[in-house]
Amino acid sequence: MDNKLIEQIKKLKAERDAVILAHNYQPGEIQDLADFCGDSLGLSIQASQTDAEVIVFCGVQFMAETAAILSPEKTVLLPEKFAGCPMADMITAEQLRQLKKENPDALVVCYVNSSAEVKAESDYCCTSANAVEVVNSLPEGKRILFVPDQHLGQFAAERTGRKLVLWPGYCPTHVLITTDDIKAARAKYPDAIVMTHPECTEPVKELSDELLSTGQMLKFAAKSKAKRFIIATEIGIIHTLKKQNPEAEFFPASDRAICPNMKKITIDKVIGSLENMQYKVTVPDTIRIEAKKALDRMVEILPEK
Ligand code: 13P
Ligand code: SF4
Image (cartoon, rainbow, N blue to C red; front, side, top):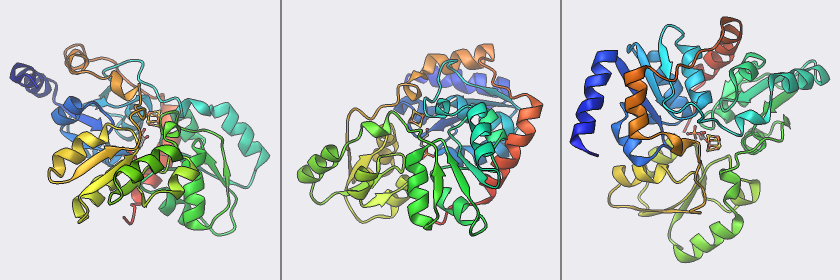
């Protein structure tokens, strides 16, 4: 990246007392300029612990909302107003209230990829890094509703042996990865380990070696003796995988696995965000207080891997 731009961002950050958080699916140059880059769980923990007054969130709407819920005294900025998550939009608070009415004794676990309103209607939040631990922590025999990602829900059900009521949401980017993609990549790189995100479909997961959140993929690659990896998730993470493991090779399972919303953030928009303090993400107190309970329970339950 241009040194002038780096200096400009540094100066603006100091003036605003800002920290830049970025998700592992962000464009490479955004990951490089961030103070902290990570998966949804890591970013939530950072957002709840930072001393900075301003959080510039390079990710999508629900991530910035999560930061605003966990740190209401801070100003949270999303550099691109329309960076949303289509999966999060697949369930509304009204739909969840209806589902709860139909299952009056159930507990609700919502994936962090959900709106603040949906979190406020949920008992527990989870990320792909701790969904298994969150479900395992719930009382035996209790009915559990899992929203909105059916594929993460299915993964948690299989790993815990619990029966979950799954909402039929999905990530439009992860479902683009097919079994043919995995078979073709394996044929090309037979010695490679296939690391797959739980948001992928069940047949794809069955053909994989490791099912991991993006943060867990980074940890796994750092510890592994393997030198080749096939990556079945949004391709943005390959930037950091390569950077942290220069001696290893990483191949995307599919070049189509690109989240258009994650790629809306640019360096110019980060600068604009700091200069103009835009776009502020806030959550009304009535929703925030309820949503925070579900998020607090999530941040407390750490993954084993
Ligand atoms: P993680 O980085 O938590 O694995 O999240 C994946 C994702 O799809 C975020 O939108
Ligand atoms: Fe949402 Fe999928 Fe994009 Fe993540 S990768 S932000 S789940 S659409």
